[in-house]
Amino acid sequence: MESDLEGFRNETRLWISENFPSSLAGLTASYNPAEATERHRSHDYQQWVSLMAAKGWGAPAWPTAYGGGGLNSDQVEILQQELARAGAFNPIVGLGNMMLGPTLLEFGTEEQKLRHLPPMARGEIRWCQGFSEPGSGSDLASLQTRCEDHGDHWLVNGQKIWTSFANISDWCFCLVRTNTSSKQGGISFLLIDMRTPGVEARPIELINGVTHFCEVFLEDVKVPKSETVGEVNGGWTVAKRLMQHERNGLSESRRATLDLLPLALEQVGLDEQGRLADPDLRFRLVDHLVTGTAFEAAMRAQLEAKERGLPGAISNSSLKNIGARVAQERYDLAVEILGSHALGWLPSNNDSEEQEIVSEWLYSRAFSIYGGSHEIQNNITAKQVLQLPS
Ligand SMILES: Cc1cc2nc3c(=O)[nH]c(=O)nc-3n(C[C@H](O)[C@H](O)[C@H](O)COP(=O)(O)OP(=O)(O)OC[C@H]3O[C@@H](n4cnc5c(N)ncnc54)[C@H](O)[C@@H]3O)c2cc1C
Image (cartoon, rainbow, N blue to C red):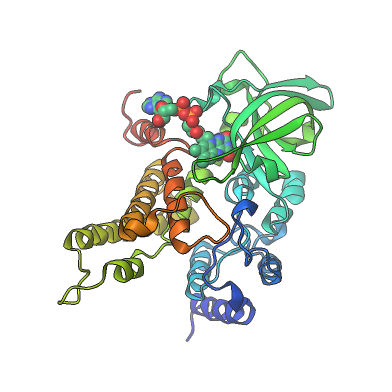
């Protein structure tokens, strides 16, 4: 007899085969319009977004009441496997789905959940994260953006930096200072509509030519009190949970999307015994693939533990660091394999696969910085897991 999970797999496979537009096969979701290709702008892409949103599969693990798919972790894994098997993908991605959604599920009021989660799950609203400030990155709790109580609303003044996608976002989840006498205990968590007068996002250009993050200036920005998540002065608790989701999401996104083997076979070829012709590269490639497989298994174990309400065997901070290292190594190897084909630098209109890989390789330097740097994650593991003295 067919188990529930097998049944779910069969239904999912059938639904994907009937609905996923073949013109999108092999594509991945694009969050940044600057990097969108013609296929991302196509009618088929929009249709795929609508179909996935209607199933609640933009946020497959969220309750259906808030626009999610109501799936358990086994079903989510099956959905991911079946999408990958068909060369398909979840087109509804973004910082809202990855970080804010799960945080609102835990800390938001019913009214906030009903208002903000369904459009997020349908991919209609873009969110950005206003945490870092000039002078407050790793030591985030030292943030200075002033937030004053004006009766029915807050008045916010300050500056944020490295705010990814702020220039194209509709809303921002933001940390502000509501009390100056306590460091962590004086922070509140606000949801700010980016169209509010006084909000200005100025883009910053990155090394790979893409402008994906911004400085955000907040000048006399009025924010309704109903957009406070959690307690006033209790924002640090909300932020810490959000950063856990961020690390989880970043580890998840580090799962392999670039297949190195076909690339190596094509570029390096085989020796007379049918093995990859370069023995040194062969050794390092196998080493990388084994580490990558172990990382995938650890991610899977972590998801299962989370589903059962158990602490994971490995901290989110360690997973974030391992995921970043594996992904950086993957792009280092890809660029090495491409050799002189990897000389393209800035993006151009006729981007080749080689140039895309170089661009990703350049961007991969950021993996061990954003979401809390490598050193800070090690500090968290040392303190919270190994109980070492600070
Ligand atoms: C691509 C990218 C996107 C980003 N997107 C966003 C975003 O959307 N929203 C947002 O709010 N922020 C964002 N950030 C900012 C990111 O969170 C910060 O860059 C990060 O937290 C580090 O802060 P910092 O850059 O101020 O470095 P600093 O805190 O100045 O650190 C500099 C160096 O010192 C080390 N260091 C600092 N303190 C310690 C310590 N106590 N022990 C050991 N080493 C230490 C750090 O590891 C780092 O190597 C983004 C960053 C990048 C690169």
